[in-house]
Length: 400
Image: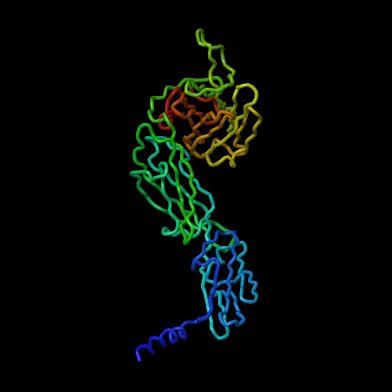
């Protein structure tokens, strides 16, 4: 009796299970599949009936549009073209062998994760900048369990950093699909001496079967940590940087006075930034008097280079504010140009002075602990006052 029941039990369970006697194959087999906005993905479903019957297979959408479906004997292929956020949802493959049914569901997750990161400030001055913010643009979903942000030193989270807040705002979009702007702010710990050369903001999107990250570097300006009193003197011409960098070498010779007696070596070649502004506008010239075969390029400006007009001609490159009146408030930050070949940099830092009265101030600076000079530009476009070797030289220390 017991032996007879043991033989009947598998048969009874088989009658309760849909699809007994056949096998539904789905590719990819995962129950959840992540697809980026704009990408395309194919889902294949196949069924072979065990008893020789002709299999019928069809994709169905439970709560969303299907996409493109092509079905044949024993198979059905679903294409999702140029995926949009509204294409997310559940799809089901249904197969039949006679009266026996089979099904497999796939939850399609559509995400947006472009490499669009901005940081503020764009560069850190140790001892002065205590907070840093990182913003990711046009992302979805933005839930903390899926989308995370961190501040890194090397490949590890910066030790001692504190998260201040996290803001999520909907981006202005013409399409119906919502995208988000996510900003996280951190309180920086002491960076130590010497400070690390670079921190990174990292954002990560984590979905089933997918883990993607983007990084944005935040340079830490070296040797700019010891403010000194500013002493103002007048100048009759624009000021250029005058680097002294014995630790770097170059095969090109700059346009400079003859070497001092007893010194047969030439000075290394570096780019220089000149201020050639007209009244009410900003125009900067980066040049390198290094002989033939060199070129200079603007690599950084407050608010991004797209906000300015640039023109490059070999060893000279111009940057101008165009129609922007620089007697008004403007973004604080670094202007930077690079020499190629060699990679030497020249840098200029500008700080708004008094927005209401239309003044603006700034200081010249070089990376790596090199010579730093300040410029305080008077309202109305008068000649700059030169403040040698001081940082920071901000408006609260140099008055117009």
